[in-house]
Image 1 (cartoon, rainbow, N blue to C red):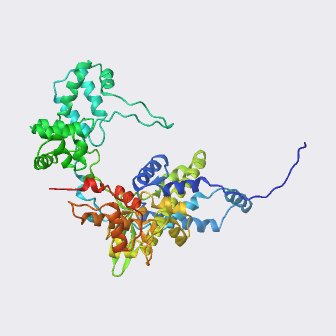
Image 2: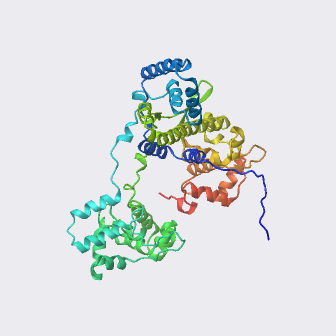
Image 3: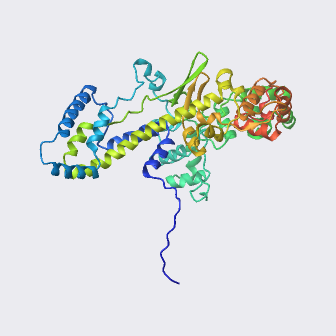
Length: 495
């Protein structure tokens, strides 16, 4: 063993902090970018959201030009001036940088008047969620402190449908917490075991009726008893739910020894009950969700034009007045130099992000032109590689650009990732996008006979016969579940 010195030449890819910042900004959503810009404005004193006055910039530029002419004809010692010039050359000339910044034209802005104001729907009051609605009723109820504590635990364990969910949750390490029981909640609140069912029943009679039930059957029973349903209807809910879900009315009539017409009438009444107590009290109301698009697609004649949406995103500028004052302090010069570099890179990264989104959006519009003109049935199969090769970028960059970015077009509002679909082979024709197949399945089910719904195999045969699409039955079942459509046995309607 010995110690040697060896000379080796190699290539290595190193990501600079500026490149890491550009990549991070590229994958941020619109709201996250706005938040990031606000943080940078707070942390960097040389950044400003106010555009410098144009006339002030011109005046400053003329003054600098006059000073520069005087420097071209020095009157002092030439040797001393030469030494000063060499020293300045070794340092970053931030004053010249500021001069160049001041002579640049301001970036165009699309901000306008009333047309740019947010729609009135976004200024409406958000509806109250189920949790707040139940706590409000709890405050009006005559509960003891222990009973109130138990009720708060019950309300805090409701799922999105309004049912009491006491199942364990998955930890970060992959393990699950143990399932709880209603007795565990009572023990934690210090409630006597005999009072637990009584307090739970009082909560289940809050509005909406049937909330905090442990399953669908219990919720329907609570509603049916409150509304005064007949004994036969209560018996069907309590003992024959498995037949009722499958519309097997003959089996119910046979087991209950009643006419099938009576079962039909009972099923009609049971269908009037609410199967999802939290239907009108979701925490995130679909009616109040407002998505601001990143780009707009506008049709001008026969051409589609892609425009960026800069509303809400603050324009960043260099705070020249403050920077000049701080540059006069020798102790602050290094600090200001670093902040100026960071500000310059941030402004460039935001502009590069905007240009990249526009470039990718224009390529998507070009490749999916038939979709924007004729509808979803003409959506073409497309993968990230297709766009990456067309715009000369890596697939990972395209993935970052299309994540949480939205496009508003004459066809509607879509996430950029919506346009990337796997291909489904057609018989004797070009391939079709999987999203188009989903919509075709949805249209077939909407037009079916509700008293005799189509099976998945029947949908396979219709797709092959009418659309020339040949797919497996399990694929139809997968797409149907993704669309939130029930199986044929549960779609059957007799009334």
